[in-house]
Each structure stands twice: as C-alpha cells, then as structure tokens.
Image 1 (tube, rainbow, N blue to C red):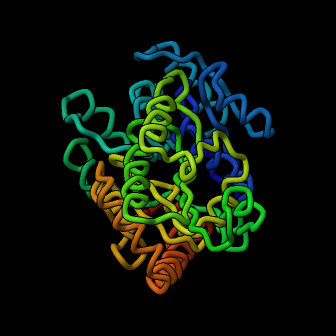
Image 2: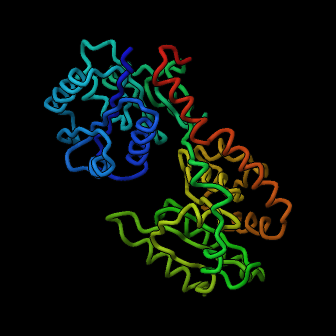
Length: 373
C-alpha cells in the first residue's frame, strides 16, 4: 500500500521562527521515512536550507497578494506529486491554496498557527478560505482560545500541539564548565542567560533594569548574558541596550555575546534562563531551558502561562517589569532548594510533554489518520 504523501506549504520569503519550524518539520518527516515535498518561493532562505540538506523542495514565484498563476502552479504540483495531505505553515497562503484545491476534496489540509491574532478574520473571504481546513493546530490552550475568538474555525476543527524540544541536544549533560569559566570569575558565581534576538519586544532592557536593582541591593556575584544579534534590517536596539549598561555602570555584570553556535551548552551551563518578552505565543527557549534542567523565568503573557506553572515548573513575572524580574532572580540566587525544585519539575515536564518523540507521535496521528479527534 502506497504511503500517504505530504506537501508542506510555506511561501514566506523570510527566515525566522515560522520558517525554521517548516525546515525542522521537513527534516523530521524525512527521518521518519514519510514522503514529503516542501513548496516554498523562489530564492527563499528556506529553499536554500532545504537544498543544502538534500530535502525535497519545489519553488514557485512569491507574491504578497493572491496570484492566480501561483495557484495554478500549486495545483499542478498537487496532481503530479499525488499529494494526500497538505501542511500549511503560513496561513496567508490559504488563499492561493483554496483555489488550487478546487475539485480536489480528497486532499486533507492541516494548518499551523504560530502567532496570536488581534484582528477579526471572520469575514466572508476568510470564512471561505478557512472552511477548507480539516484541522487548525494551536500551540497552547491560550492560543486556541485566541484563534476561536478571531478566526472562522470551530473548536471541533482544532487541536493543540506544542512546539517540541530535542531532549538529546538540550539536556543537563550539555553543561560545560569551560563556558562557565569563559564568563564567570569564580565557580560560585550565578550565571543568568537570555537567548533571543536583540529586539525591544524581547525585553532585554528589563533584565538590565533587574540587574541594576540587584547590584544596588548589594548583589555582586552574578553575570547576565544577552545572547543574540539585532533583528535583521532593524538596527538600533544594541545601542539602546549598551547605553543602558553604561548609564547604570553594569559593564562588569552584563555581557553581549552576539551570535553563538553553542546554545545548548550555554543554556545548560546557566543557573537561570530568562524570557522577558512582552508576549510570546509559545516561547520555545523556555522548554529548551527546562530540558536542560535549568530553572526558567518567563513573563505571564501569551502562551507562556500554559508552559510555566508559577513556582512549580518556573517563575512568572509581569511583562515590562524590571523590579519583579529582580525579585524572581533574587529568589533563585538565594534559595537553592527552590532552584532545584523548579529545575527538576521543569525537566520532568519537558520530557513528558515537550520532547520530540512525544510531540511527533501526536503530529503523526493528526497527519496520517483519518480521524483526528
């Protein structure tokens, strides 16, 4: 019996979290021996990455608006590749796909939503587009509630599948004394990391404010790593953050690491991992920290509240609040029993809920079984 063939659609020309998920999905399906071809736009970074890894990829012209030519090219691919299931990573592509699928009712369509929605899409056109979805996947219960409010789908059309973490790559065993020696003066110093692009919405400035509060309260034996580069084509945040560090005289406490290729080792070598974003639909870095057995601090906004149970699997603080963040860090610095309890519970949840085999099993049921619910 011929295996069900999958087409993954992601016509975004950008390279960010959404496109990385599409890339990882193609890799995982290939590892499982599932026939899959990814359709993306000409000259995209996703197409380049897929080609570099020898993963099946087809390109069609990109367009910010609906393109009949693109829809017909997509329809041609659907027929020639004998596709039975489509994974839509970029929901904006539903318009072209809806036209391409006219008369092809046997093809199942599964959509992924990667962000919260803030504008109603329950007009006639969007209703026509979303009606073709067999399943729309949300990342957390909070995300599902948001989509039900703004998007023309029913709860019966939806399922919840979180992002996954590679618990081999991100694990307590990745802890590195070499990395700790690179940044710390003594082995007893407390290492705090925030991993993410330097962007106003990622909240690095509030972590700098928290560090300033801690120093003013007498804390000395700690170091904060701001890991990442500025958002591509949006310079300026590095200067803002650097000026803050100089103004507070925190040069001995804050390190801008820039790009690092050793993120699993760096995370596992930290004593606390902070995600200070204004709001995140999910916050993958949190489950990476949990998988490394590192206590995490996140903002109680968006889907983070579904990942962290306050004072059990992590600590929650209000967004844009350096003072609250300082209090949370002080708790972890001064209460080793709290630190260990949170780290152990976070690791257990990462293994039981977010590990790649667990998440992939649920995705496989949705992708390849006729009845999802």
